[in-house]
Image (cartoon, rainbow, N blue to C red; front, side, top):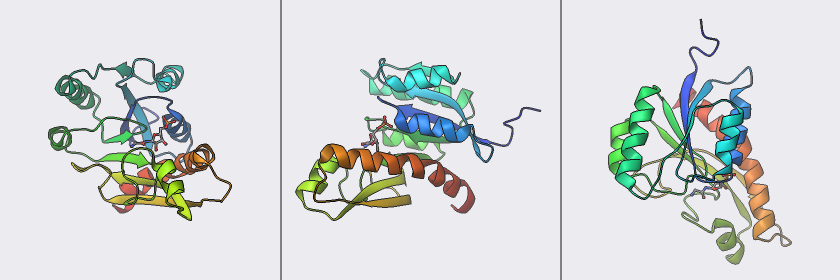
Length: 192
Ligand code: GAR
């Protein structure tokens, strides 16, 4: 019997650096992991995350995004072929259509670098500092048709210090992201 049988099959969508992907690969290789990463899809040919997938011998594919419909249809085909149970967006900087979400019909998670519902969208750290927030953090949520607005699965906060700048806050929050994404997946499949 395959060692990983019984594990949830995950596809990860990325657009760039891929540090969240890297931490999920690390988690998937632990004994307690409930997931097997079966597919990595990138809309960006030079995404560094694709190299992590290659190195870890995970099926990985770049799909051109110039045509959104084409990107989504090719992705749906691959998701079906690989019996994917869950999609994790990890620094995937495109918005999936309602049609895609409906057709996939299984959960899609996203990780976002703010304490949602605050600071949806881009430049979260810059805006949090500008507004003199005392805390920021990271959120893992279900993806629905509205941007960064689906049900929150897990959230963790960090203190914003007076000495923090956008870069230092981004670093702190990313550290938190790497801790909570795998925990959110476990939570999704156990108590959701
Ligand atoms: C992460 O901070 C993630 O939360 C953010 O992009 C970064 C990707 O980093 N995602 C979004 O802003 C999505 N709206 P990574 O490529 O190193 O995982």
